[in-house]
Length: 322
Image 1 (cartoon, rainbow, N blue to C red):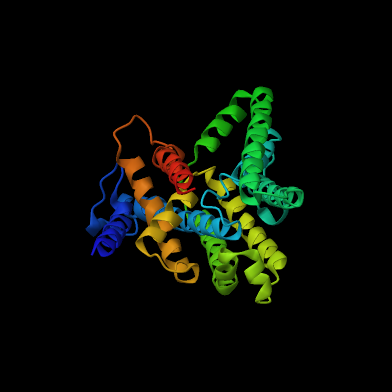
Image 2: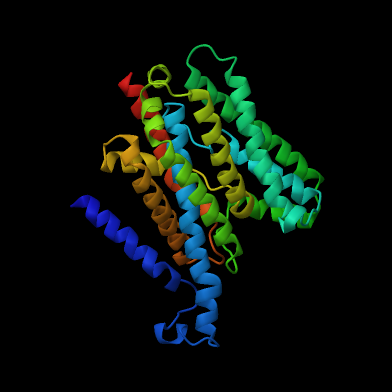
């Protein structure tokens, strides 16, 4: 009963979110092509809701993937420094005042993607030197990389102009504000690719969630599966962060909530985690737009307020189990 109520509430928020904002929309005017209500709804509100949904799906699914591959409840692209790598790449593009690169792709998106991808391969390389407490040591490596990337970002901030610094500040706070359908289509494409890849390898992930040795005994090429899924996840995360900026803790919160609601194996939680992640971020974005503030509260602040205490709770609960 509780699960049905949660899904019902999240679905209701998703359906009503496009009507929430500083301007009240009238349903009868939305379908008049030349009306202001139609322009706001189809060019601003609806693209934003769909962009937010697919962004939440990418973050939640990536969190589930990392927690499974490394068998650690605290592993996410955010805590491993992959999001920070994407932010640094985007910051370099902003500092260099680059516009578009090949095939019309924005330099910020390209640099953000390669920043995330570089961090993944760096973590994989450094993990070869870890002997004991592999997951915990990898988490510490990710935190160290995040701090290092933050220091480099501060150097860029110090050397940047006022306009560049303003772009960096707004970017690092995270934003889901989009105009038109270009970005929602890009993120939906990334989310679909990530979902298909994770779902195709769902049985391998189920074995990896038990142990790497168990997966190898069953004939799973663990190194190949890990690299493929991490690269695809990095592509999705790098693309998202390069557009929206860093949005933390969604990949940490959602997989644990879904696991509490549905204590089944991972292969049966992939779809639920994807949908819940999208709906959860839509809820967070709707809250940020309904708060009575002078300007829209960045989504990264909302998720950090929710995720910070949750992260502390996970650390304490893990320590008590030992």
